[in-house]
Length: 252
Image (cartoon, rainbow, N blue to C red):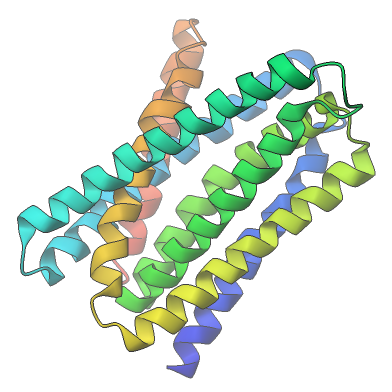
């Protein structure tokens, strides 16, 4: 058990350090930034779908006594994040209408901060729960989340800057939101040690979240690229992401 906690905490700390990658966008602009981000998003799509279908779902269905209940947990993850994202979009639009001229920092900056904190907390729960299944599954999940977090953190850093935060404050906010990942992992490990069914409930829910993020949020970004050569590169990069998850599977 101590080794399990050590692996999980080391992984979530590594994932949290990704919050610092936002500073990488400072030297880039225009087409270079777009190409770099597109590559990372494609890799994240493949890794998240690969982790969901190669690691999380097989483990969840292998451990469950109710396949229907597990499937419903997957759907709960998908619809749950749809509702959350819809609420955040509605809240942002509402604040934009009422507070547009009342603050130096645009409301979208604060809403992005809230959304990032919640997202990181869920990521921490997922990492902790996946390590309760097995160390290789935990490592695969961490890799998938890191690949997703890099373009997300870079995007959030850009949102913070555009909302009116200074670069120094934007970096600090990214680091503070990363602490929610550690909190989520500690909570998952603590609850999982006393509630035996906890991983069986959280794992399919996490798979649903991964599927939703990859297909609903990331894939539409990739469709903005219309050049055949770059579209082909996107597909290859997605397959590389899936391949990474398959490679980790061989070590289980």
